[in-house]
Length: 348
Image (cartoon, rainbow, N blue to C red):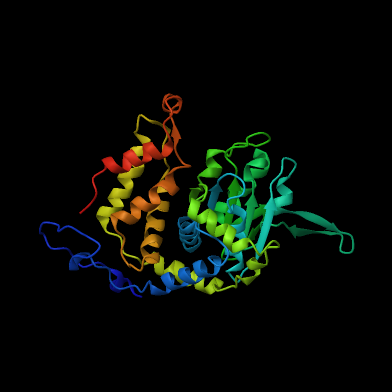
């Protein structure tokens, strides 16, 4: 599609009408990028995973948004609520490589990215690729490894490359990291540095299933002790499909007023008396990208304020830090972020 086709027509100098889901004024309608393939591919993946997984619809949507925008995801929750299972099922639904790295206190950076190995036949060093060289990478219990090993992920997560002994090795697309951590058991864990957290597009905080979902889990697996049901999940998405989805999502239309709205939300986190640390410009870009993805997954080729509000918490919750006073008073990050979003005027 040419640049002329994606330009938005000039808006008339009149009062801005209210935008609702059922009425989008003509001057705000997007120039017609077709997002139906994005929605259909996402539904196929969710249908495959839904054969095994019960509930967790929001987590699946957010994982697909991250996959389709080139980001990475941190899953936080207590043991046994399908964090690892979801990552493995998502990898099965994509026709790409998959690797799992179990982080432990004795894990070294070379165990993750690889190391040069001396070849006695050629009297030369050959690089042995580590498990990070895959497409979908599950890092289980990322906070179990010390800072030195966590730092080995900085370059590869941001720049999709690994540099060892001055030689840079590029990752193949897609490259998608899903990391898990347990927020309760802190013995033998290492807090992730802010620079590491900022490289995750989303932090998804998982809760226990509802009573109905718990019943559904028992009914689904009462005859499947060995997990054979997982083998029914088929690969329905190719790397080419993912690249096509990313290109379509890039073309989803977002108004200038909504870009200002995103900037206002992030800027407020830096000037809020309840927060010790605000969000970086990387957070602004993350909200913009994932709001476009949220619109595409809903079958729309334009972003609405609801898309921005939907993705704001998973984008921001791991990038801000409460002041000690608010922590002592029992405030949660969600309460503060929800209050910020509510106070900012929504564009019409």
